[in-house]
Image 1 (tube, rainbow, N blue to C red):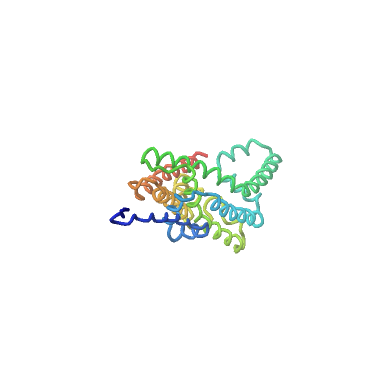
Image 2 (cartoon, rainbow, N blue to C red):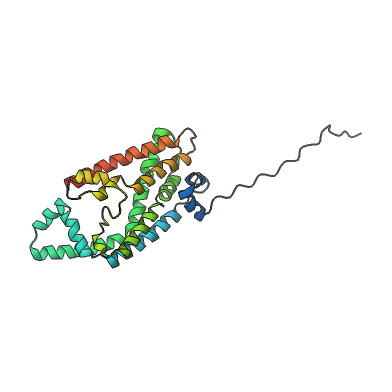
Length: 260
């Protein structure tokens, strides 16, 4: 005689399929309207190539417009006039050597604009390593390097707006050479309203307080907090830490400008 169990055995439920991550366009859009969604999604897929490529496209477009609209020889002369170190170097040359040196510098400067994407890649690699080290060792953020890279390059995306505004300014200006593309091309920081030939330390300090730069700094801190595996690592702590690091960088840059 067979016996039946008093209760039927439970039927194992099917495993829930993993939720699909955000698409690249969604990540880019959310950086502006809901950055937490983008940064939390980096836990699923920490790909960082897309934001870097997108930013590089606009950097190359900016370089092309600069090459067409800005007199590189005049721009180079202005850069020399603003640097005591460069002026001392030029004073040691004959007039003919000075002209030759300026032409070479102008060509190098024009080429330099086109290799900005490589510079942002190297800079991103360094920034990600530094911030990952600080947050992991000091705050136990538990953010791997690949995810740190993605945080950095997605945080740079708002700079695209800055580049678009600057491109429009160069195209619309009656004399693009009057736009100081090396320091303060637009009124997004207090340094724009100061005399660059005055106190260079205060000028460098004020120039560092740029709205777009502070936007990126805030995103970096918020991104490391949102993408961290440690729930105790708060956005306030992360943003404050990046702000302090950026403040040190501003002070060092202002001191170098005052010295050279």
